[in-house]
Image 1 (cartoon, helix red, strand yellow):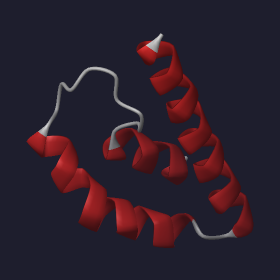
Image 2: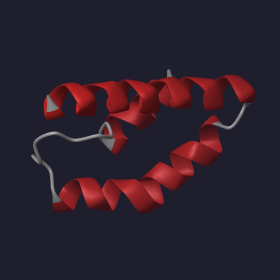
Image 3: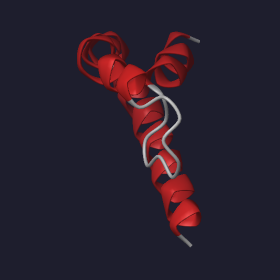
Length: 64
């Protein structure tokens, strides 16, 4: 059940990212992810049940 909940939360994060991009805040979000989230991804790269997508994945989607 925990992995289903984590997948639901990851989907919510990606939806929020799309909305931020729609509002014109993509570059601000990319800057935040690069400075604050990417270092955390390197510290725990294979943690099971992640509730957030990797910063690299989120940045890539924002740049499309």
